[in-house]
Length: 313
Image 1 (cartoon, rainbow, N blue to C red):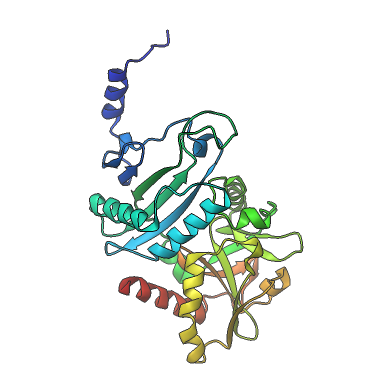
Image 2: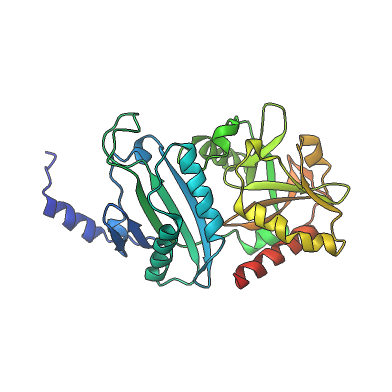
């Protein structure tokens, strides 16, 4: 017989489980505050973010208890919300206050902040109007960067068979991430670290959760055009920092362009950029060596600049 549980039964089960997960603090607009107990880091099942992917999110790093690139991340969150016609939960200064308070409550010096702005609970329909309104959730978790070996020896990537998102969807960081999930599955199934997508014209887009940039044979550091990719905060900041490499003559130019598979094959260096991995060098593409097959000096220099920037934030 399947039991019908009382509220107290549910409370007992949740507290008895006491899951040991690396989730340190959560702000929930449903609760109106912060909980430190992973057992209570819950979402309403009828929140449209849960059953329709109707919401937007960000992942933000903090180092030394200082949140890195906080304003750019929240500005992108609000742009994504605007694209979906999602009323912002609060002004950006209030959102910053909530994130700072949640990080402080976590007691952690370094980690990852996962931020969600949802359509809200209300029904299981597809109508965005059947909800009680926008909700906001912030979860502080452990940061799991790639191993030191990956940075020292580089990673292997391949070309994805998963169709890339349309230009509009690619530029919105929504919770509808099924193509990204399938790209990650594809990479794991192929024994690769990452796969990267290409648009219908055959130009480079992005990876499951990372941007990709190359150093051309002419020593130019380039990223794809923004039409079919998310404007990655780490990538944008890295390119700003790369101006010092340009001034030192380490690279010849910085810019953006349509990047073909041939461009990738002929690149001197390839780099994956993202919040959790910073700058990760690529040493093979589709089984072919990138450059000399070793970690390149520009990737190393860019990683040092980014780490220094994080320490000084």
